[in-house]
Length: 98
Image 1 (cartoon, rainbow, N blue to C red):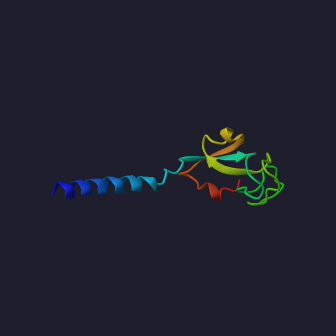
Image 2: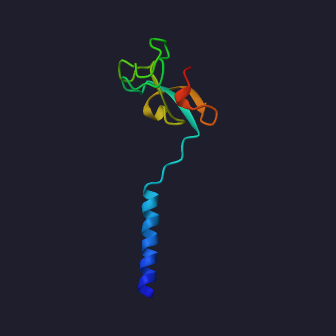
Image 3: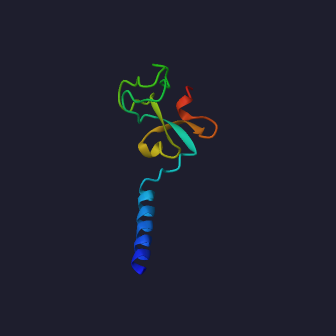
């Protein structure tokens, strides 16, 4: 009986640990439009200077006119410049074209 109880407790503990390994982190509450950190072809929308109007059209890495959304508070850590902050509950960042 004690052996079965011990195995049950061990199994429960292992299942708990395994479930935490696959836990999804909480989504950011706000996003920043971060210029100057995006790789060529990976920008989120049109260039700040109007040189192009669509995502994926950045011609070179780290252009100061091309941007990507990052969680609020991370842009300057990446070496970029914040162009705009967006509250996640008000607007989905991938649908902002301003």
